[in-house]
Each structure stands twice: as structure tokens, then as C-alpha cells.
Picture 1 (cartoon, rainbow, N blue to C red):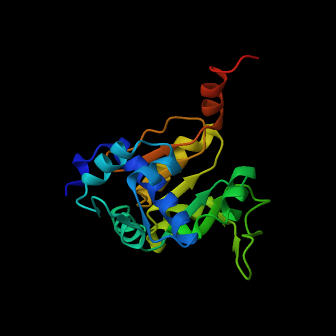
Picture 2: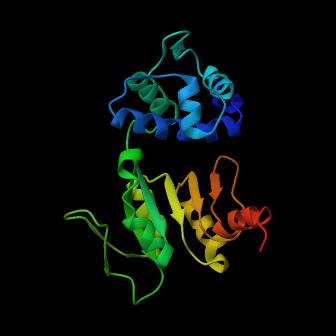
Length: 213
């Protein structure tokens, strides 16, 4: 299977399916159907079957999908069967919230280090909310070296827009190949580096289009 030939919109739905399947498994279920899965995620059964068919056969007509097997296969397709270390850059309110977020560990990700350029923040500890686990905020001037030495491929960019592009350039220099960008700025990166932009205001504006004041 050539990953480049799979439409990005299909790839974007796979984590949604995986999350729903994990919830079904947590509820003690072992099998499901495309119809039931579709009801959980708000996507048609036909679309789910079409999406999964991009990667092979996963279920049998009349018996549905074996949940543990489908979780295993989707985890391998998304490469989250192992844990990815992630660097967080920018330790303002968003950065602190990201580091403390408890939802990464069981989804294939671990915040491994965090950076800031504020002398008042550098060297201070950030509690992650889990027992015996905290981080010392590192100096952003050492970011390229530290990330490269740790062989970290993913980063979350939580800086102001004015600093975002420069930080992104440093992340690329450090060998990062995937950036989750919280700054309200479209980043310019080389081909081969994936960027996902998260701007809550944009999604709020999409909703207010449909809502009367």
C-alpha cells in the first residue's frame, strides 16, 4: 500500500475510527459493524467501508469487525503502535495546558521536553499531573541540539504568531517532521514536513455562520 496514494481526508478519519473502537473495547465489546461504528462517529457505514478498503480487508459480511484486530491494524497504519516523543515549544497558557493534558499517553504520544525563551520560565518545573512526572523548561536557544540529540520527530508549536515561523525553521533544522501549530499563522515548511494548524477562532467562526446572534 502506497501511503502517498491514500487521500488525506481518508487518513484524517482513521484516528476518529480508532478512538471510537478503543471506546467500544473499553466498554467490553469485541465486535462491531460499519453501521454501529458509523453511528458512533457520525459517518455513513458506506464511507467507513470505503475508507478501510484503502488498506485491505478488515471484516466479513454478516459478522462485522473484530474490534481488537481492527484496533491493532489501524494503530499500525497510523504508526501509533509505539509511543512517539513530542517536544512542546512555547510555555505560555497553551503550552502548559498541552504538557498537562492526560489524553496523549494512551493514544501513542508522550511529551518528552518543553522549551521557552523567557528567562523567568527557563529552569522552572512543569508538573504534568501524573505522579513523579515533571519537566524542566529548557532554553529555546538549545532547542535544535536537544531535539536532534533526542531524535524527536514531532513538535507542538505554542508560541505567539510573531515567533512561529522562526521556531518552525529551527524545528525543521532539528529534524522534526511533524508540527502541530497552535499559532494563528500559516507556516512555510519544506516538502516532507507535515503541519497541522489548530486555530479555535476559525472553528468558532465556522459555527457562528450558522447561528443567529
